[in-house]
Amino acid sequence: MNRLLSSCAGLLLALSVASQSASLVLDINPSVDRSRGSMQLVYDPFVAAAPNQAFVVANDGVASQASYRALWSLDLVGRTGALRGPYDVWVAGPGALFGSQVILASYGVGGVGSEPYLAPARGGDPVLLADLYPGSIGSFPSGFVPFRRGVWFLAREVTTGWEPFVSDGTAANTLLLADIAPGNTSSVGNFGQARIGDYVFFQADDQASGYEPWVTDGTVAGTRMLRDLSPGSPLSMIPGSNFVEWHGRCYFPASVPGGRFLYVSDGTAAGTTAVVSLGSLDVGQLLATEDRIFLSGGSSRELWESDGTAAGTRLVGTLPLAVRGVDRMVESPGGVIVRGLVAGSFTNSLVYHVGPGGVTQLAGPAEDVTLHTSGSRYVWIGFQRASRFDLLRSDGTVSGTAPAFGRFWNGGRVLGQAQGELLFAADDGITGLEPWSGPVGAGVEGYGFGCGAGIRAPSFYMSDPVLGGSVRLSVRASRASAPGLMVLGAPGDGVTLPNGCTMYIDQPDVLTMFATDAHGDWSVTVPLSNDPALRGLRFAVMAAVAGGGSFDTTSTQIGMFGD
Image 1 (tube, one colour):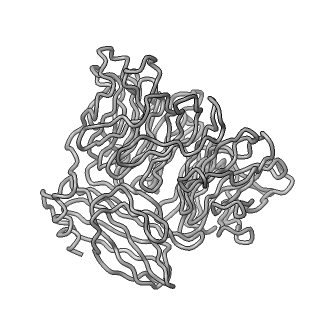
Image 2 (cartoon, one colour):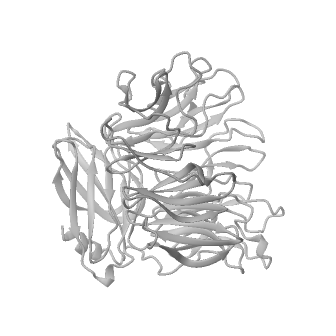
Image 3 (cartoon, one colour):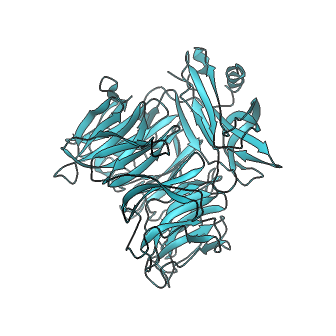
């Protein structure tokens, strides 16, 4: 496995190296008026991250109307950017990386309302995918979930409310999956949907059964209610909760006669069963990590963990009475870091670490808190308070939570991660609110998804590649007792594989051969030398496992060597 280091050293000329301190990526709106920063009028400017760039919505101040925004692609390493597409009103908020393209919602030109657009990862204007609701209002697509058959999203047509759609990236194959609630009534809300293997699980109300779990394989015939868990009841799905994939199965909470339960599903009605009672836990969010699932209480202040069994499901901790609930949760060493809503306030939040050692307050109160995990060691906390914006880096302990990248003016927020850099909106008092970024150090970014068979899709995990330490690589939930190989290369824009999934690796080379165990798992820990020439170097790895005349593939993990 020392080939990891030698192979990466050979890629030094092919790969970009991240910067060493935070700085302005691009002054998109170079106005002398600081209140005219390019992100001043965009609440959520982040669209999507790609292996070699990030996409944001910003206003460059050139248009005749100051409220106009447009799509921009940013090279965080080269500190350059490009206006992508006609200068018009683009809808801010999350899109999704879809193969080698980014799908997003946008108002178009010529009176086109909010519709789905595709932007090539490298150059070219976004292209209207389909005008689903002709006119200036539009279909308002949202909730994009890429999977093997294409991308799932919510939208409306003239004769429907918001319903599930699917697209393979062509207008001809962008279609309504089902008018679940017939007529202009909407059946689906933009919350909780998730890709699980070759399927998308989502919540829907057909106006007869209430909100229940639904599933689709991306075809009209394969779109169906998973199971009516609470017949005759207005709903079984808990509002605001979500589905997660863990070890080749789907997990979700539900409220049924007899109480609230954690459910597991293999994608069939018969294979959808309760794992354990959750008592009175008002589940707000599920978070799947490599070895367990965390469950947060939306308004009950409790945090639970589960290994997928009744015996392995337990209460981890309860937040103080100062908190009225949890609305955000990210993985952290030894547990999770959560954003708790301050009791009696609609704007202030507190930040806690919850793990085996108990509940520890890390930061707050603050008017606006954004969280992002950059790998296996650190969580970045965007901290807005008293007209100031601070970035904190935390390892989950009080002593290990400290300011990073200096202090900024009001309005900043963490946006995402790309190219080994943390992207955030900040105002330095000179340029206004503009995109900034700084290095995360040794860290990991994930792109794409695993492709297996049916609901089973292999997962790939990589720890932070710390120089002088080690990096752990592991495959979970793949084919049992099967041969596999790991591929290494430079981060790429996306190549479609024969099995329909995407590999984000250029110049791929076989790193090592391996074999999975009886559970379809494999892992290895590789020692890393403290070679300064590797610091800031980015590399991409993924795995493939063969068997039965086909093969499974994992997502692509992009790591960066550092401290």
